[in-house]
Amino acid sequence: MERGLPDDFTVKTAVAMAIRAPSVHNSQPWRWAKGARSLHLYADPSRQLAHTDPDGRDLLIGCGAALHHLRIGFAALGWRAEVHRLPHPAEPDHLAAVEFRRSEPTASEVALAAAIPQRRTDRRRLSSWQVPRDYLESIAEAVADEGVVLRVAENAERHYLAVAIEEANRRHQADPAYRDELAAWSGRRVAPDGVPSRSAPMPDPTPGTQPTRHFADPELAEPAGTTGEDAETVLLVLSTASDDRMSRLRAGEATSAALLTATRFGLATCPLTEPLELPDVRRTVENEVSSGTFPQMVLRLGWAPVNADPLPATPRRDLADVLMPFDPAEAFPGPRHQGH
Image 1 (cartoon, helix red, strand yellow):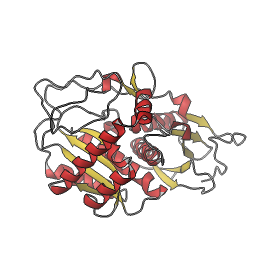
Image 2 (spheres, rainbow, N blue to C red; image 1 turned 120 degrees about the vertical axis):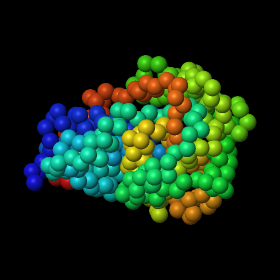
Image 3 (cartoon, rainbow, N blue to C red; image 1 turned 90 degrees about the vertical axis):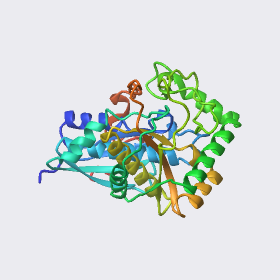
């Protein structure tokens, strides 16, 4: 098979797909460096949210999601990505080195790539239609392919997860530093990052409704005729056997796989990291929901109401701000070893 780095147009197209990945508060905490025969993913620690994500777990998950988007993008363009994760322990921000082989895309890869520009984080109320079990099984298979376990929170597990979501929301609202950080990253109209006003609905005070983050200046209207949180909304927990950096990166790749698979089915999706951002609340989810494995992501999914308006795409930084050539004279983001 032919090896090497694809041409510039292909690389830019695939990276443009990669940066459509979701990240906490749309912080986009990634950088890409283009070598002669490989492409490198770096975390951007300047975009870590100190009060929302103090241990950097959300940052790694966001970067993992971008890595999976990249893999799918290249696959649809005829290139198989060979990923070396965390290739240099002395460079903790260097998350992956990617090499390539020519490969014929599969129908599934093309369909997942087509889902990338269609996926949205939908924080609105969902309909009462039930999600077919075989859809959930397909999502679980996609997650398992990334080495991550998916669990559907049902019955008592759903109750404990709902309590964890409510507790995290309540404590975050009582934390002035958290509120200031959330306000700084939301309510935006022209910025290339953060949560825009048009993507954030007003918090719903209806008793029993699942609480959401209190984003600044929310403008997104709920679909007419919907009230409260319906029991048919599915809550999924993605968890890993370990809680190291590799596990968190792979959890991000699994998050992308789950979201794109759900989008293929026409489902509305929303990542929920808030109940996992407080250590003791996360331990409750670990003990009561994920059966002793480490919960890394909660996903909410279901059917949008038939009268729900399409959501606009959230903004992304320019490709020139996140993709740059390898320069050994620069400490960041250039990799030291181009051959990986």
